[in-house]
Image (cartoon, rainbow over all chains, first blue to last red):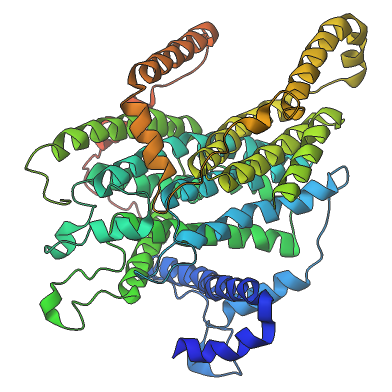
Length: 356
Length: 198
């Protein structure tokens, strides 16, 4: 059916068709992602409100309909930021100042190219998907560093320095956690990794169980990579006002904001794919619709992990900087290294029941 | 595609050495790394290309920028040493030119007769092949390189590690181990009587 639907535009664009079709597929990922980001900000404010026994945003509605209260908040926020003036500080490097938000959001979006939504549904099914993801997430730090430097402001610069050291440190732990996943799945392809978690055992067959220390490390390093509380020393509003984006206003600030939330969604998606079985159902296959694997399961898992991020923010106070460094270098890296060795030995014995 | 990447690469590499601002130069170096990774991926060496981005762009250049941004480089002082460094620089430049000439004039030296590398068969995984070679045929050189690197890391840390004498440093491990009982004492005392009317 899809082929017959696509026949007309295919003839319309002629030789340009592959380019147009790829662009359309990219839009099909990016537009829902941006909507998710917008409503994630609302969900964050609502959820933290519930946790602190408040109501959260409940006024802005569409067309004055009362019970939609709060649902228009992200749209209103976006519109407000869009019409605000972009101020470039005096003495700032204008080109880099504008380039920085772009550098922040580019890797957050580019990484989605290899994320599989179901066995067939993936934009680019490359073999080294996991490596590509690591490379893309490691590029995100450039936005922060360039922003801090180009702003010509001490506070922004301090934020950038903190962020650079933090992200480089946690990337190592994250990389080692991914090494464990690729050992267990025997593949770098994300689709293959999900298929390797497909056993008869439902949710016990997923990788969170045999790789539990790596799962925790990945999740917490993910929080640190996205500069979210309690690892948000790059922003640290009580110490360095707002860190690297203190000089940004209007849409340039909004792009940083979008990048942070898009990164959060990305890390949650990856946790769901690598450790929580992706699109596989937690129930046995005999349960009919509940037992069937579908992208809906993937989104449900992603939503759960994203909510964990918000929960962390509502619960924990910010880490002190030397404590962050200690956690990354002295706890996570040794834990992951030991578990990789344990895993290697474990996979040689008959006790390893996950992958055959 | 190749020409586009090559043009960007040459432009970025030129800017690395001509840019006035050292931060700009470092950022152009990042661009050069990214484009050369693109060229490698086109040559079916996707593992090397991605690892170039991951290691050099993602980690090494970040730390490089970190340092360069904190330096306050005075251009006039940099120019002072120009003439004394010129002979060494010129020698290196001549060597590079000679090497480039050998490669570029390859047809003259019979490079064209060398067999063209076959393109990889379908289902060939660059990453897997590299891993197989590194851990079977070349395992001893590989391990040796790793140990040398480790020694270099230990040496670098040992050279730069200085404990400051008067720093008010508290071990985070001790802080994490603190329980409530070490800090707070809850005293149970009877309520006091109100004295007279207020």
